[in-house]
Image (tube, rainbow, N blue to C red; front, side):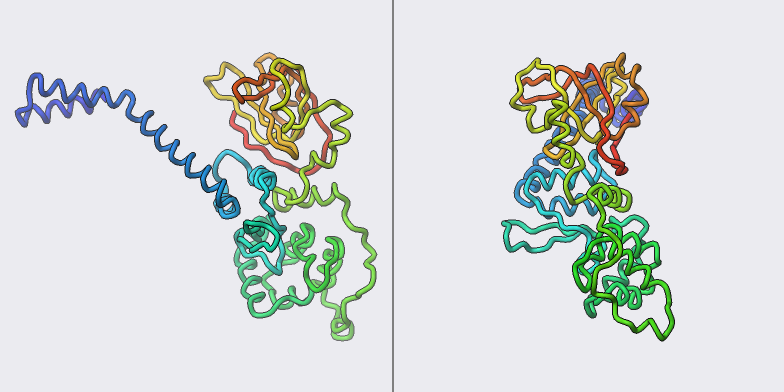
Amino acid sequence: MKPIEEKLRAGMTRNGILGETQEQIIQSITSFALYGFPESHAASFALIAYASAYLKCHYLAAFTAALLNNQPMGFYHPSTLVKDAQRHGLKILPMDVMRSDWRCTLEPSTIRHQPSVRLGLNYARGLREPAAQALVRERSLAPFTSVQDLARRVPELRKDELTTLAEIGALNEISEKRHRRDALWKVERAVRWSGPLLDELPEMNGEFPLAAMTDEERLVADFRATGLTVGPHPMQYRREEMKKMWIYRASDLAQIPNGRRIRVGGCVIARQRPGTAKGMMFMSLEDETGIANAIVAPDLLQKNRVLLISERFLMIEGILQNQDNVIHIRAERVSPLRITQAETASHDFH
């Protein structure tokens, strides 16, 4: 501000603005500079927060689709946005080559008061946009009748892209509903030229020799290929085990009295260690019911640094602090949870 003030004073002097008038102008500008930016920043943030809350409340489907279509952005990973929307009643439909566009879209629902969100092809890792757009264009001319028909009519799709689509269930709806390994079997046939004698044979309609994927295998495939799942949260599959370990759900915490020692567990979705927090780490754990926040003191962080920085699923034991609807756990002990091998992700700031 000092160089600007000197330049301003020189300009005012040249223009005959002197003495007390000059001092009043300088004082007014200096006073505003001390709080003007924080005040305007707060006002702008308040407006954005209000508008976002309104859209989320009244237009959840469109709001969620817009967030998913404008990644990377914001604080939360797309997997967390999907789970939060689902907990608020939004139906998110899986990726489907018979219905998905490149980006996430809205689809009408006959049983709900709001549209559903269809996951876009852009969430299939490794799928190139030109190939996906070629798929959408060809589909608009006529529906695909089989995986072989898809591969023939959209030659832009490479084998690895077809395999990814099969692994995440995006080919399940072609021709007849089958499971993901059936689709993988069909992809292998579609990409291998078998000659004129065998190429015209119809696809087999009986049982395929490959077993359906387990829940764990579907989770691993979903997170590896899309970074999220529209199916159950990984913690939901292990809830009975968590009950035996006396691990509370995130949704239970509001009813637990302040000061009680408890355990929470979940997928780590955020780690924060601000420079102004005196070495404290703030963590957010997500389960199928919501998000639990924890505070990790510097000494506990030092003792368990690798665990706290690298583990994807954690159990945190500590004292619940529940005051004025602000809820978090002051961590005293941490340990890893063996929930899934799926490669979940967190947004870390430290």
